[in-house]
Amino acid sequence: MVSWSQMIKNFDKRLDIEDIEEFQLHLTKAVNRKISKLEEEYGTVSEDDMADPRDLDAYKDHLTDVMISTQSAKILGDELSILALYKKVEIKTKKIIESKVPNPKSKNLSYINNVRSILPFELETIDGYSSFNELRLLNNAIKHGGLVSNELSSKYPSWIEGDELKDLDIAYRRLLSGVELYVSTLVERLYSLSEQP
Image (cartoon, rainbow, N blue to C red; front, side, top):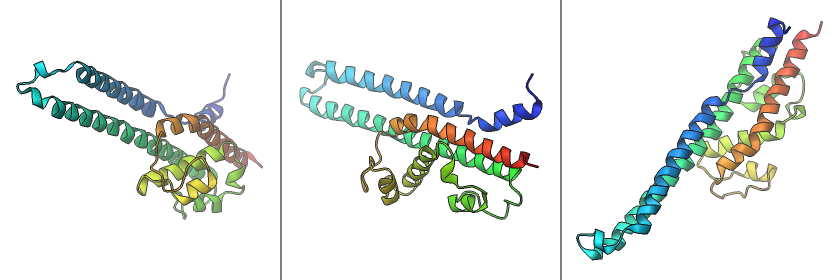
């Protein structure tokens, strides 16, 4: 039988991402459905469908613009997923630090350097830190213009400074398990500190 305190600890170690996953699922389905309809229409529309046959090219251009706009909504959704995941980690970190570290409230825990300064261990020693840090830098890059920052590219060379952030859905999936490990390990370390005599 699991004790109440162990159940709370297990809950604290878990990063709740179901809402992000559901958002991604619905957005992807909606975008794919709309793109599919637009592509079908693009492929089947003919001069016979136009009041003036000369309007066909302009109509196809319009369909292309709508497809591009639809893809932009998907890109925005991918950005929101990165922002939401980081926000969840930030909230979880703040909550657990405030409950397990003496007098943390004097610091703004939205800043990574403040988190580092109050922990009795190095944040970089937490399993999954690299995934968390890349997520943090992606979050910052999205919020500050949507381009790869110098800090992101210097720490993670697969990103090229100044490039537009792309394939954020792939980055989200790639980073997710490491970020979940980071949260779980951070919580475990903070619990072990508070359990020491």
